[in-house]
Length: 280
Ligand SMILES: C[C@@H](N)C(=O)N[C@H](C)C(=O)O
Ligand SMILES: [Zn+2]
Image (cartoon, rainbow, N blue to C red; front, side):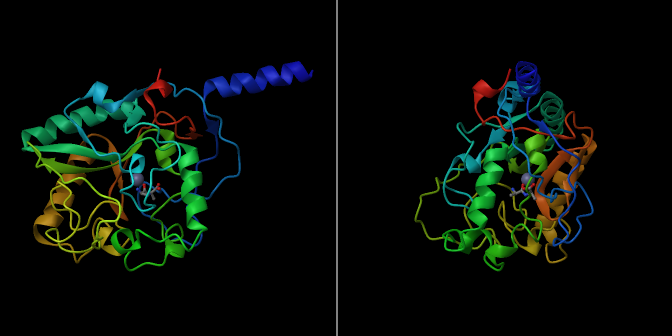
């Protein structure tokens, strides 16, 4: 009997990830109107497993740029995040192929996509949650959440646990000019500038101007924030049109966050690390 149970558990593990009910926004957070990425944490153990039907985005479309921030120290935590073993964008094949169509359209207009984060393993989400409970660790506040208390980051919907990213068809991205301008490397300890500062002052990301930097936890990052006008507003709208035309939905609190509407794993949150060895 015990043996039979073990076989069943092993089969579940082999099928990959763990299935959960569709996440809901936390009651503390305002309700997002689209692509809700602020679900209620669901207690359960995620099973590291190969990622079925996932691909490395650059294998599907090598023209797409990548700056996988959570594999580096240049993110809101200030160090590489658990589970990011390699700086890769892993996605379901369906999402990657949809992005290839977005890239075709972006290139026709003189732009290219640049991805910041794609599939995010559950251990990375756990790392974010653990970090959020250590109020003393705020070395990146000046850049990433200059006007928001760290204690509000999850409650206000800027970080999700669990997150749609763990289902493999959600990603964070921007547009760069093509050919892309070079970007200075981020050096740990360099002076930090608020992500809400004008483009010429904040970190010199080679993104076209989106009105704030990436992972800027501030209402100015809300896609339709009325303070974002002119070129930056046009650029957000351009990204939104390109992505929407290919079947993605924007999260209205983050101009960079998109989910494939028709995702293949709407209920499954994966845990395998971000590494080439995790894809089939
Ligand atoms: C943390 C940020 N890049 C992001 O993806 N936020 C949403 C809300 C998420 O974590 O799902
Ligand atoms: Zn995101």
